[in-house]
Length: 321
Image (cartoon, rainbow, N blue to C red; front, side, top):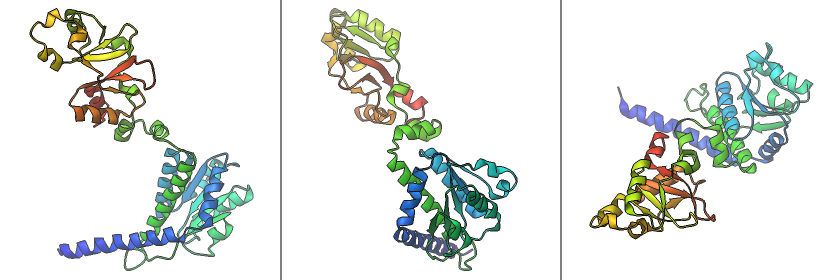
């Protein structure tokens, strides 16, 4: 087993595909912009189709579109010939992939789009191919060798097609001003959804706030701290504005004669807070950086009232880490 040979092969393949992507970037022209405009003008969905390896790429492109604000789904060309052509309708745009541009299984989809005036964007690697001739917008992949020395395994060509799909999706996303908040709506589960969670999604609301008003004896503040179980108690003025916080550290610093003091005599003024619309990941970074376990949630520009409280365990339970 020659490990050095394996390593050289891997590097050659990646370098060859990287070179092809550079060629693709340089080859983009007005046709790319026309494809983006065509999709933006569609009232329906983007129907993505391809056969074989192009089909696998088509599925991924459809998924990327759908998750970034462009409604899309994949239609298998063989299934399309047996009833799934009904998934294409006026108002849709077809995005059809074929490296050769002559894939016979795509014939029915191409014919259907022409018959019912459904705009079609064709992606192929051969100029003058049937797919590109029939397309309303033709996206021609630049000539680049496949990654294998035999030149028969779809590798470089599928990499370029996938990158082209990503480029279309991002161009559409940026034009629509698709925000992380929109993205999270499509990704509520898993690590990605957790990272995009907002503080208001995880915080404990007003009913659970551990707060006392200024002038409250420390005996009362300690009772509230114990009952609410966050390990802290906030101190508010007579208008309900958060002005301080009492933590375990404050208790230790005022241990002597603690019960003779009031909460505002013990508290730390101007406590750390977080906005309700901040990402939970940001709140976790603040807590880790300042070595605290809780943050009161206060809306910026408001009246200074706490809207909730976030504990570091809330972030960890949600998978924000």
